[in-house]
Amino acid sequence: MYNEIDLDKIDVTLEPPTEEPARQYYFMAKCREWVRVFEQKNGCFPTASIQTFGCQMNAKDSEKIAGIIKKIGFAVIEEESADFVLYNTCTVRDNANQRVYGRLGLMNSMKKKNPNKKVALCGCMMQEPSVIEKIQKSYSFVDLIFGTHNIYKFAELFFTMYQSERMVIDIWKESDKIVEDLPAERKYPFKSGVNIMYGCNNFCSYCIVPYVRGRERSRNPRDIIREIERLVSEGVVEVMLLGQNVNSYGKNLEEPISFAQLLQEVEQIEGLERIRFMTSHPKDLSDDLIEVMKNSKKICRHLHLPLQAGSTRILKAMNRSYTKEQYLALAHKIRQEIPDISLTTDIIVGFPGETAEDVEETIAVVRKVQYDNAFTFIYSKRTGTPAAAMPNPTSDEEIKANFDRLLKVVQETARSRVGRLKGEVHRVLVEEINEHDASLVTGRLSNNTIVHFKGEPSLIGTLVDVKLTEAHGFYYIGEQVALQ
Ligand code: 5AD
Ligand code: SF4
Image (cartoon, rainbow, N blue to C red; front, side, top):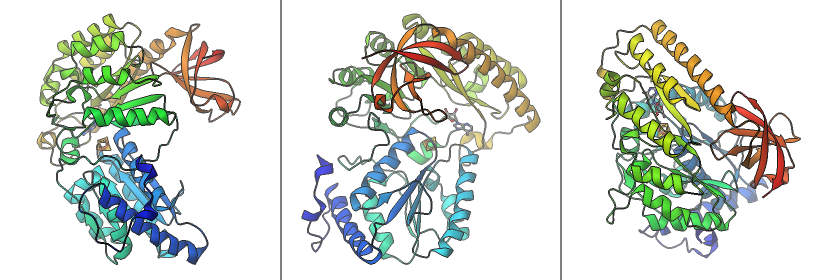
């Protein structure tokens, strides 16, 4: 529908419309004029490179920006030698920030060689005032900065940047606006992320996300269904429903609806084969959701259920709203109801005041739950969060030792869990040609485990039955049994 809007039919001699998304299409048309002039002058289209840091939300935002850039007429390329380079940043841990500063250093010297090159920054890191100050002071060559709330305005900002000699900065503290029907460029033709909500109201004491992504806002279920139906008509077979806390989806809508109800509606969409979602907070994972997952033919057998810590004292200081016992009871219930499900988690080590005994409790939970995989992080102090003001008497060496002990157990349990399907036949969604051996293709099981097997590139995007012949730690080698 919107991808078919013909920019050439928009009269750019008129004043820009005030309503959205019409206003953005007007600016896309303006930018397209600029691209034509560029093409005449240089004999080629301008190029753009989008570099994404962080989570699936950011990946999805980058697809939206790429959609607009392509519509304008830029060629999107991987290399940072492009005429326009955008960094979509993450600030969940400090190392994500440091990586961006490193890359900006490189851009400075590239810009000196090519003064027409434009550099832009967006995403979570830009919502922090101290970051903006630092960029203005030390990276004054940057041309455009915007945040997480005004991505839909990208065409307008892009146009303003090319008109301006100075750094353009547009950061909003909050937004209750959700603009539908803008173009998006998908990385994979057969699978896609779909935002169902934005922001987060949980305020875990270590986490910066509520400050940089704002309050919880759910998309209207009809808009979500319409988007998925369109994706399916374009060849998508798997969707990943995205939200910081999908279990509280729909609570603030005029006509409230639960996440479990939304899933039931998505399940009805004909032609859609697989449904995934990210991320669940254990505190509001309902019995209804477990029931819906259990009875579903399409919802994947995978649940990412962040634990963060296994000590109730630390969980309380983290403001997680559950105890160790409540988490264990929930994990037990899920495993009982859906025995073939794979559970994965996130764990932080080194939260202020966490002792070796606390980490032993976390390790005990890992042993009990038997995660299929766990992402382990060393705590990173984020300015402005409550935890940043908490004293931490534990030394870096102790934290590292605690982290290593945990990681060892995580790897052992994951290895033993993943191998359990060896010898069985399971359905794989083929995603790509194997990175190391082009005679193999790589795909995923419903439970998210990776499988490599001999196959043609034409299998990409299809569901194939594969016998899992060898288990290798975190992945399987298999043999195709029959086409679907
Ligand atoms: N330090 C370390 N890890 C963090 N996470 C979030 N905030 C921090 C922090 N300040 C981790 C959590 C979350 C994942 C996305 O990142 O485990 O689930
Ligand atoms: Fe990083 Fe969090 Fe922003 Fe995702 S939402 S990009 S993890 S800070």
